[in-house]
Length: 118
Image 1 (cartoon, rainbow, N blue to C red):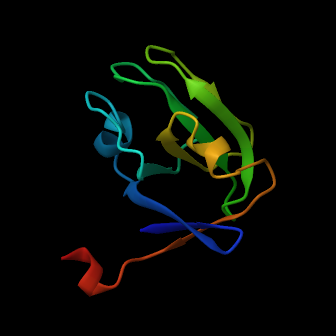
Image 2: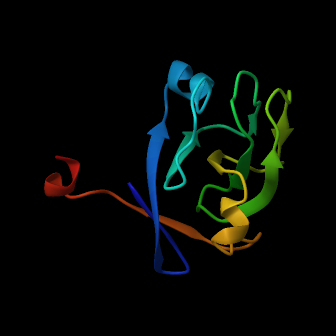
């Protein structure tokens, strides 16, 4: 999926993790590219065990509004959470600031067309 912030494209490609295994793995065991993110559905807390680099964790309500941003969460941290969060967007460290994200902003996601998935 493509991510938009304030109606503007961000250039970030978002993978959705809905199952237990895909949510558990997230960005573990690999380097994170600057243009990628993972949306952890039905999730209100995360860890960074086995991650190779720091990440930004953006906690979202059911309407995709930002509740909290945990900037540059270092590897091997046990938990970060936000009351009321229903999903978490994991991004490379400092991406939230670079994109101008702040609590209260609404993120939009648009699915790719069939031609874009090839």
